[in-house]
Amino acid sequence: MKWRSLLKTLILLISLITLSMIIPLVIAIVMEERGMVRAFGITIGAVFVIALPILFISRKQPIRFNTADGCLLVFLTWVIACLLGALPFFFSGHVDSFSDAVFESSSGFTTTGISLIVDLDIIPRSLIFWRAETHWLGGMGMVVLTVAILPLLGVGGFQLLKAESPGPDAERITPKIAGTAKFLWISYIALTGIQAMLLRLCGMDWFGATIHAFSTLATGGFSSQNESIAYYHSPAIEWICTIFMLIAGINYTLIYRLLRGKFKDILRNSEAKAYGLIILISVLIISVALLPTDISLLDTIRQAFFYTATILTTTGFSTVNMNLWPPLAQGVLFILMFIGGCSGSTAGGIKVIRHVVLWKQAGNELRRIIYPKGVFTVRLDKKVGRKDIVYGVAGFVFLYFMLLGFTVLLVSASGLNLFSSLNVALLTLGNIGLGLGLDNASAIAYGFPAGLKWALSFIMIVGRLELWTAFVLFSRDYWR
Image (cartoon, rainbow, N blue to C red; front, side, top):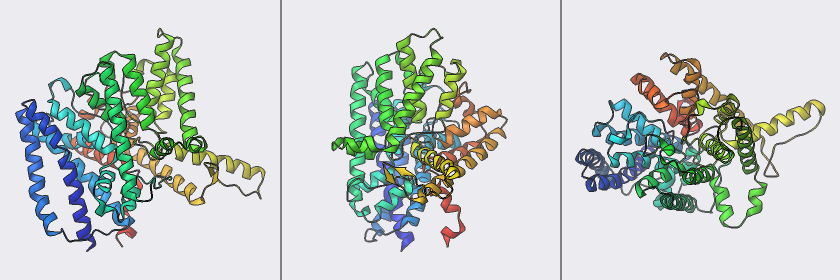
């Protein structure tokens, strides 16, 4: 019964991803991109030929699962979504192999943003749209979308959300999990629409505005132009993207409370205060580092805010060559690559809340040396936190750096130098997409052997699921 429930739910999730291909299919038809009409048509047709009979046979099968089942379901959903999303790339003929197509799709759904497509000018618009749409869908998560749309997944829905975003601050926003998922997606859609309209007012066409709004709110970084945001030479566009990147890096629970007028909750929130402090300190140091250069003061502040936002939120947009910046400014950005956005956001990385917990615990350990008999606890949001939060965060950070080290060894085995290997590892595991010391991360990844591309695709998925959901499946106890 459990496997039937899992299969039915998995088919429903995959069917939703396939339905999302209808929009780029329509674009391909309108733009008369015959090759892409065929690519999307074959993919959609094949999936529904397989899915519809299974859904019909299992229509009376109730869906029941627990947290452990949710981990397996979420992991399989992301793996199959990346494989399914690769088919339009592969059938289009604009990537060299299926391994390249899977890498591109994985980079999209996990909002990493490393692309193996070198020249976007020769890529059909429908494929560029699909590439950005994978960002947008992966940003909030297909599981959350399913829980919002299909009430029958209301039972056990929280297990799915916890499996997909297993951070230390998982909580319901509304009493019913379907209501929580709907709020998340309504907010996500509204913010995307607002940003797209603002970008259109600043000179982008509707296609480019939509693509960049998708990538910004998903903190992904795919662009419709080879030069990314730099193509537009517009300070207004850079400021809009900066503001929305920072919004996308905030916990959506706080956005909900803000909309309900609970401003004090935001001021009391430990993660929000740390997030704001990190931004201000980073901007200040980068601005000071850039002052001796030929850049004007206003441009210095704008670039400092933009790159703080694009690295901290793991978005990966670019406007200038960071490798030409002073070492101090590069050092700040390198540190930000180890932080990431807030929990409950679309950003990747370790997440701010985990750094807050470890910082507070480090302070407690110092006090314990001075007062050996003292009792000290970690306080979050002015409330006493549970001890297991500290243990969970410590375990996560240890596992994160272990996997980071393994990825560095894996990439360096391909012949890449050590610092570049570290950058590639950070970009894939942290879902960042933009690194230091790399002339072109996409060009470097393009030259990787097929086996390494598959391995990095898997690491991107593991990073997107924040490690635990994937690694628990490799435990013998899980299968018992």
